Image 1 (tube, one colour):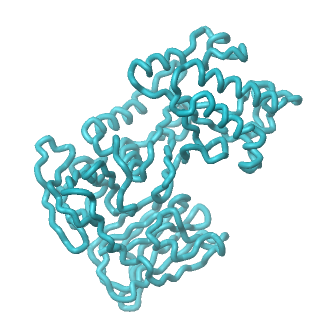
Image 2 (tube, rainbow, N blue to C red):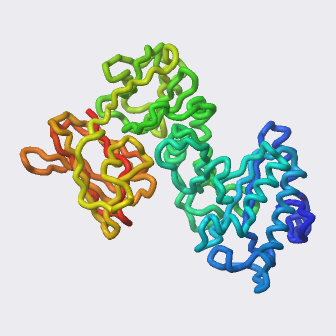
Image 3 (cartoon, rainbow, N blue to C red):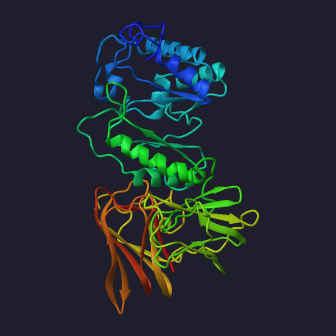
Length: 454
């Protein structure tokens, strides 16, 4: 897709287009003040020196039984040198393995592709160019694909997802993500300190599928024009904890509360001891004050009902000074006794489902497709909110939430999928024992968080 001097198989020499699109793109980015980054596919399905045995599904458009991977790596280094010397400053090289190198571990892959030599070459030519983690050496940032990482990663990350089910254009794929899904993904990813990369499979003439993809992107753009302050330039949720109603981002002394679902009592509890200068809806041009009340557990903000924006209603909390977070855990289940239906030895203990860390999880026995976990609060407590997470695997397909009252288990909520954070609210229930019953899972059930709140 650029004017390489190392092959005649290029958009310049082998197509009627006969121009270098990357040169034109680099010039446009420079003029607009945008840092240009390149995607580079490690496997090449056309090069006669890339072995078919290493390709995805062993497919190769130009198979050669005498393919020489060492010769191919030299060719690849030459291309990387061209890319990093002919187009000005490059912000990142996004390497991809394209589903290739099946059956090999990361050490073998890195050795075959001379990954360390490639890293050294990039740093030599452009020391400021970032490298993703797909050279199997760690990289400068991670690229979780088609999912949002669990917990709050300490390493920079960019979650990459397609807008429908395919990276390339597929005329039969109309399963587009809704604007609500994209906006809420964006808010959750920002709340974890990451970037969101959306892939749209362009049609043959380079345009986005219309009206489907355009409608989604236009709606997201409309939301960002009003609420972009809560995304751009923000940092992660300072509390590093899940909420039942949405996500939290921060910028300076401002907290941005991304409200996806209406809280049962109409209030958001934020675990801070700061004074609040004011609270308002970011989309409200008048910035009319929202009601704020202090409590021993933090600040309670009353939000309008119904919510202002069905995609994501953003509440701004302007704090009086630097954030002072509460050290008191609001999760009633934390460090409480648990009983589980089964456990997979060495795959995570049962206590990891109530430790407040989304990146740790309990795993049922390998053959299980149903499972249950019971939390003993050790005394009767009023509970009206439960937060569940089965990240990172999201295997749950049907579940019940149950409570034991007068010796009998009663169902108080049910659902299908759980995902990275599912908040369930219901009229307050006073009980000591609460049970999550996973009735169906597409693989061994796992649970990363089972949190109970007043």
